Length: 54
Image 1 (cartoon, rainbow, N blue to C red):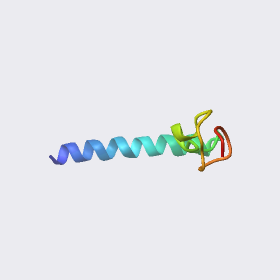
Image 2: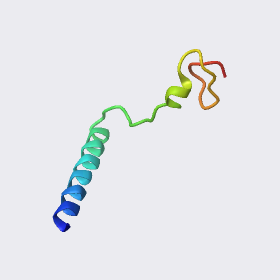
Image 3: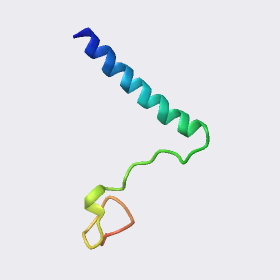
């Protein structure tokens, strides 16, 4: 049980470290999607300005 926790924690730590290194070394900043499928072309979208009819 403890081995599983340590393995999961290590993988999460490695993932966050990889994302942080990418940002530190000048890659594009992390950003989320703007509403996902709710902002698909042709659908109404109140969450963002792009796509859809808002």
